[in-house]
Length: 189
Image (cartoon, rainbow, N blue to C red):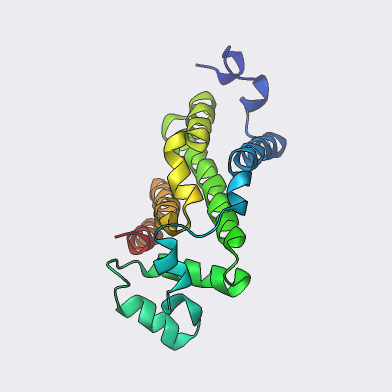
């Protein structure tokens, strides 16, 4: 089906010029901000106390700290990539929860763009890609992963898995795809 003649989509999504991609990214960024802006004022809740406030592993970002993240379980999970991500946030924001919430929101925005690319590559339908990524972006099932800081593991795992799948679809990038898949596995138990 020709996307430009589809009744449910504006003709601007029919091709993939820079202006159209920029418009799509701007629309998704605006929707992400509209939906999750209020989470920036939230504090640390539930497991955030264990994973951030009381977590000695994320507070030292040096070679020994990296080794400790990779070589040990924390609380009951093995997720070194998530701990590294939280450590980078700790380095940037200290114990200001707004920064951590901002990072989660940004990751969710990027993941929605990755959904668009995944659906576009697999179905060759700009209409399907637009609606699938829009539903992914605004669906309430995503709220917990975005608004609850210690659920960053879901966002990171999806981020690396999506990149893994996209690189798998490109010929000649199998080793990179495998590496990205491994990173996805290291983000979540």
